[in-house]
Image (tube, rainbow, N blue to C red):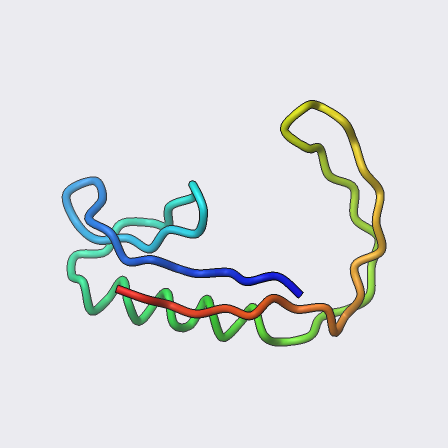
Length: 79
């Protein structure tokens, strides 16, 4: 199981949450960004459907995997 952390940061004249190098949309307040990050973290915990996924890594190699419905990351939102 992996970990996923949403961090609240100043971004583009407002506030956003960031997961890795990916930013959310910009919110007008810290509280709004934090609330959105908490909701996103909660959604990550919900099981989905088992499905096949194909993804490309940083070196340009493609991978095919089976993503199991219950294989969800531990997620959290922090300021």
